[in-house]
Image (tube, rainbow, N blue to C red; front, top):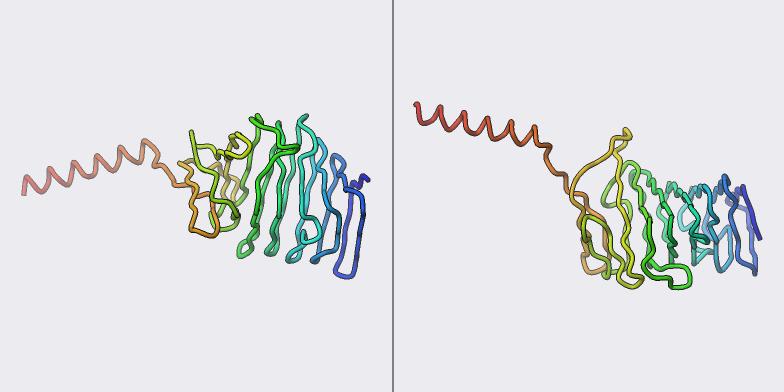
Amino acid sequence: FRIKNLTVRDDGKLESALSLTTASGGEWNLHSAGGVKSSLLRVSSGTFTLNLLGENALSGLPRLSFDENTGTNFRINVSANNSIETLELNGNATLGLYVTDGATLKIENLASKSNAQSLTDVTFVFYDYSADSVLFGSSDPWIEDNRLYIPSIGTFVNLIAYDGEGNLLQGEWVYDWNGETGKLVLNAVPEPAAVAAFIGAAALMFALRRGG
């Protein structure tokens, strides 16, 4: 059944034998582990915000799914350590991630709804980006053309990152797997002006040394 706005506090419970569905413009606030229990959360098209305010707030929701390919903007704000067992992607979907300093969000499995292949216009947006804040449980993905490639579903994911002041970060992405977890590392690329200034300074120092 469909729920637009929901708050489940430390002593609250919502259990459903049916899958749960969001509504556009809705916001859910989950304060504690297991507060919401269902086999599947379907994120419908439009906008939806999920605030994870306590640890393991998704322990009762093993599967989150972009339910439609008609345009979905799904934002997750993470205030404590949490994990998503399976995240099912879909076409024309944007996942926005904001993780408070000191907290982590781990996405164990990246899949697609109904195992669809070659999804288009899939984007991950990282707000106040930190490489250690969002982790992945699979060694399979890699970076190609500065996008994340997920081979199991033949899909490229666009990657966008902002710093804490909302400035767009530029650089080259790397998928770093340490044997247990993966993370997306953005290696900054110097601006052309900065490179030119460095070369100019180096040339000047070389000329001064030769003159000396």
